[in-house]
Length: 100
Ligand SMILES: [Cu+2]
Image (cartoon, rainbow, N blue to C red; front, side, top):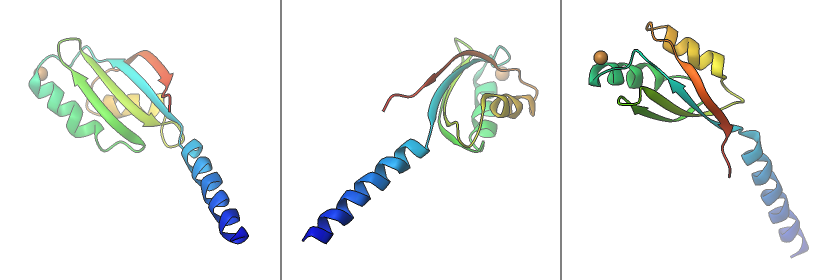
């Protein structure tokens, strides 16, 4: 019984470590070149494959792209490069840690 408790405690601790191993952040980019549905699709198609990407939201009206990413696997600069690959410039509006 004692052993089971110890093992499950370890599992909880490891689980906790696992969660903190991911460093989720949410960045909002202003992408002025994204002006219509086609641009939006272009962004979605290209950025979806970026490493460490967890969530992608586009807003054509505001020209914004909101991305949830794992800061352990990618960075703002890498994401910006992702946009640059298809000729779009992404400017950071805000970048914040995602609360758990
Ligand atoms: Cu367009």
